[in-house]
Amino acid sequence: MSTLRTNALEGVDAKNSITIVAGAGNVTTTNVQQGLAMSWITFTSASSFTNHDSLNVTTLTDSGAGYGTVTMTNVMNSIYHTVHSTSNDDNAHAGSGSHTTANYQLFSKNSSHSLTDATSQYGTVFGDLA
Image 1 (cartoon, helix red, strand yellow):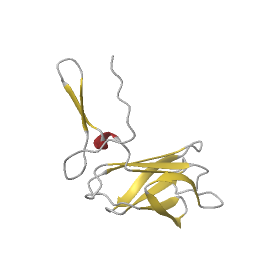
Image 2: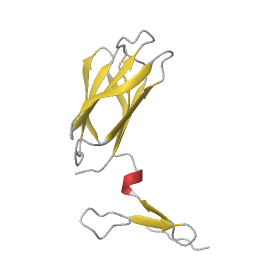
Image 3: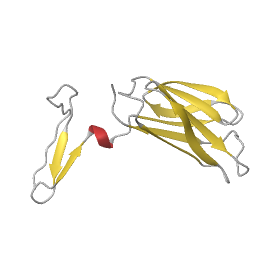
Image 4: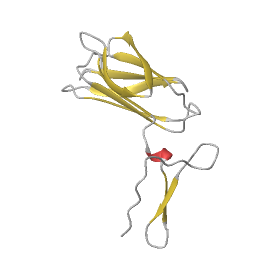
């Protein structure tokens, strides 16, 4: 078995993409950038609107009860990216509202399907950065 140790890898195409080919007979190809979250956030919308930790997030805005708008530092290539959201509050479910290349909305609803603030909300974005 071989071990490759390095501090940095850089692709040679215009987007510095790195592709890993693995498996018997090189049957599995994975683009490293496609498998990584391009933005994520953990925040509280109950009592105080607080960004606890995040990646590629420049601002978090309180957009009303249960709603937060996340603005990304580095924008997405198009509006066709995936936004996933969840909440850890009992009987709550979360989702994403409208999004652009620069921001996305996350919401939390209670068991009656009314927007409600949550102690912990989470959001993740997958897709291509511009």
